[in-house]
Length: 429
Image 1 (cartoon, rainbow, N blue to C red):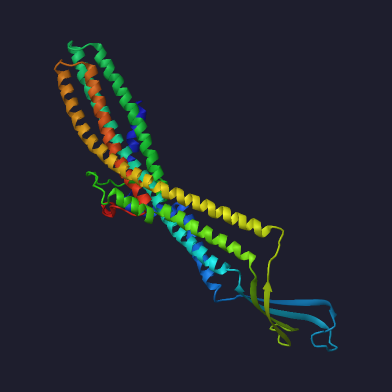
Image 2 (cartoon, rainbow, N blue to C red):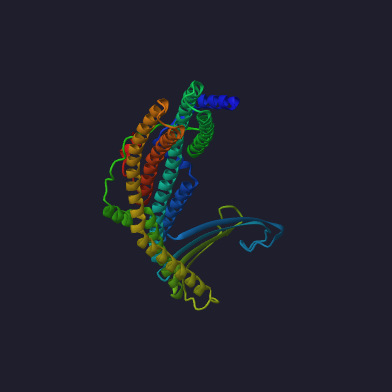
């Protein structure tokens, strides 16, 4: 046991040399490392290029250029020049340009779909950013909470050691029975076990925070302001309205519905005639950069799809199913927004009230412990009363720590729903 305690003391001393990260630094580093946020950024970049493509098809044709050089063995008759010299090599170059004049409204539908997809990608990036921030804050607060709970566990060990010394003195003087000393020895053993567990929890929390911010090992969290949590700067009704209109999760649902509706309209264009204008420029020669024979063809093509063995109907059915599913998700989100915002809003208010209650509970527990300690030393109280008062003090201290960081996590949950910071100045502090 002594060797293990010595090892823990060495580990605690080594923790003082750990790199320290502040909350704004942790949020900045962790967001760029979060896999879901990296995926969201990639989807946003894809959506931007899809939007550019949807605009470009209205003014630019698709163009391709190709060139082929062939060596013939054995040489063949020179059909290009028509001369007696056998043809040993030939070069072919082509320029193809294609412009779709009418695709049954598919261009407009794709323009609408790409715009909705871009809105969804922007909102999705915001969702991923706040989700990463919430996870980072959770890990950050876990380090601070476990550090404070370790302080509580150490104070419990100190109190148990002090009370054991008092009990032994009273037993030796005949003022108390041997049971008091045994009870306090048991309490000291329990306190040391709790301290060991809390040491382990703190080490794991530091490693998790280091992983979150991209460090190779454990990282210490810089302390935060422990003043009372402020009132929310927004009413519940305004929060519900803002969540419904600006909340990133609900914006994604609305944008996905618009995109699915546009994709369905694009499939309807397969039932209408299509008109295409194409250009083909062809050149032959025996040398590279052929100049001997050139031919240019302009083609106006009209097509009317009649039947493709049901493939068109299958694509339309799938698009309709995707549109209906997106609409159902959007309607469900509309029904859930009031519940989601209210739960997060009330969660912060309740956690804040619980933290206030925990402050008062700690004051009461400290005073009760002081009284029971004095009464036990004077012989007016039993060891069981003292142990209960000490346990109540430890519990009250731990409850205050947990309630304080539960309030911060509740605030992070509400900000995640609204998609904005409600107290940006607190981050700076």
